[in-house]
Picture 1 (tube, rainbow, N blue to C red):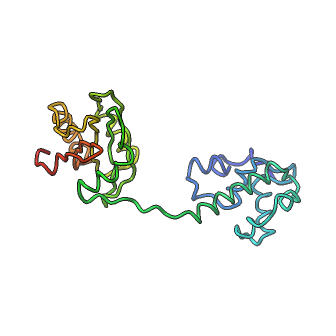
Picture 2 (cartoon, helix red, strand yellow):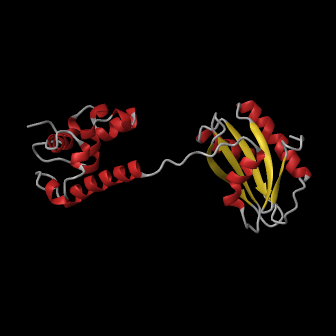
Picture 3 (tube, one colour):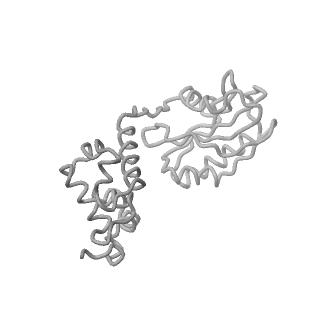
Amino acid sequence: MISNILSWAEEDRPREKLLLKGKAALSDAELIAILIGSGTRELSAVDLSKLILQSVNNNLNELAKLSINDLMKFKGIGDAKAISIAAALELGRRRKESDVIKKAKVSSSADAYEAIRPYLMDLQHEQFWALLLNRANEVIRPQQISIGGVSGTVADPKMIFKAAIEHLASAIILVHNHPSGNLTPSQADKDLTKKVKEAGRTLDIPVLDHLIFSDNGYFSFADEGIF
């Protein structure tokens, strides 16, 4: 009898192996074993997965063609396990067919304005956001930092850089909106910009600009030379 998976060294169990070494370290059989969770009295989940793969010459494309009933012909594979395998393979197919969304590249304040515009248009209260950029100045993601009222919002530099560090950003652009449409920066805006810029210099995550956003235009600290 093949040894039970629970008796294996921790680093050889699929779930533990994924946690210790990352998903790329797992074989196809080990990944399928995680999906099905358990094997039979005679076969571990990994060995059962190997048997299923061998039936299709270890070809995942051929495996994806198997029906639920085909998968259930293997001893130890009931409808729930067969559905888990089929669902995972279908997700993989859809991912492959999905168009890769090209990251927006920010080369100017106008680019930054267009990148953040869908998130701040038509708002009746202030919000503070950061555009997180990679080394090529492409937008990793727009990140909401805080939500305020009609007349103001508060942004904590710690929260700004927490988001930047979590997403491995190489630079950031600050953005907040003025629902009134007034694009003149307040003294509080200037003070915050200076504070965050100094923190970015210390953390080696430069702050490239701070935009004040309105539906009809924007104010760029960098463009106006007060950055």
